[in-house]
Image: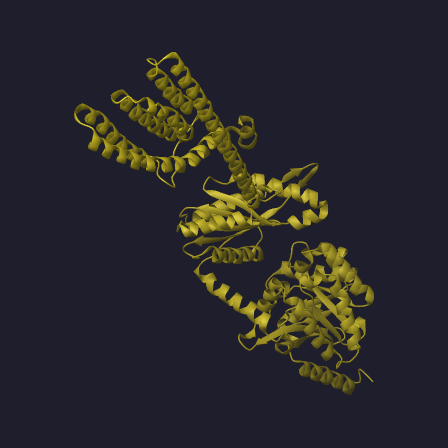
Length: 633
């Protein structure tokens, strides 16, 4: 048995076995003591009736004392509570000695040969009430020795008979004791092994198999426990910035090693009052106990970000990832663990959208935003998008040709519940929730229907979202829509942003190449607003570049902006890319831009976003004016 226990439980096996044996024997002894108390109550009554003088004092006093002691010992074995094996053994030993003492004193006061059999019966009782084998052997030996001592005055033949009875009774008692304890030990061993397996299964169920960190289940159980106890805590959701790019570049095995390195570094960096776990993928969670202030938690989160953002040397590769953190507090901001998680997730999304590598703390002001976000998600989910979505168009004006050469289609949403929703808000919400996949086909079909009404030399520009660039099947669906509309593929231009491309550069490149190879044109929007825009001029199949309106805004007050703008226009011309200046709103701005010789202008100066009918009217009026001036036949 020691070998089995050491195999299953290690150093903690013996204490666990002793406690388990104690737990088994407590109900056995409590059950034994109760009838013993009643029995000695009956014996005391018998002595009170039959005995007189010193015999009454000895026998009646001893049996009454036995009752009191047994009652006290039963209180030492409370039901449902853990008691040490030493205490249980002591209670069993004292009970057995009291039984022995009552029998011995009675035989000394009133010796009756027939009642010598009581010592054999005691041995049988001791085999069950003796908790350990040593106490059982001691009590049985004491009973047999007393019986043999009382038979010394008998004839040798009678002594031999009693010796035979005593030895037989001893073997029977000790045999039963051994078998009983062996069975109990096997039962205890099986239970402990089952408990150990259950604990191990629970540990596995609460542990992330890759990193060894607490998993999502363990994190939420930890939060639920704190909420149940009303313990103040912070929940931080942590998302690794740049992990997907590293994982795609070096493979999943390298990515797993990087996640393990992140986990080990975080475990070494956090304090004893924190729990760090992995929710899945490259998303982690941090639970900090205590009533920490916003400033203290912000400092701790930024320290953790700095630690996780240090380079990782894995094999012969040095990997760089960052981290963004969204934080929420219990009980000031949330009253249950699910709300706490939702608020922290909202804060994480804000942290990533505002500036990667940052910390965002959820506060009172964000609750309304959260409610608005939920309302918008519900409106998107339940709304009739076919009827509620519509498209407006903003003209693109060729400065040298002095005419409209195309329109950019801009998405609009008029919800019966929310009213007119700003496009930047609902498109971001649709991308986050995945409803953009429903919206893009509807908007594109409506835009194509309007484009059929324009002259064939007027193009349609349509914006593709982040999610549109991450699924290869979207290219086939878009091309099929163009063919069904009966519009020449070269009249359709798809606009993308570097933010959308960055999510999955390889997939974006393949999808855009399919569209370009089919004859569609590709435009890079908001060029110059990001740190890596120049790289995309070489990596993507582009036909046009739309320079961000921030340059146009500064051209009247900044010489540097004018020089940068002139360089960008010259670069596009060198690369044989059409160049569009966005955001031109006044004649004064146009006068400053004209010397730079831009190709195309887009902005309020040449037309605000307009309905399809107004776009048709604008093109018709322009064509009529050009015909009257003799510029077209």
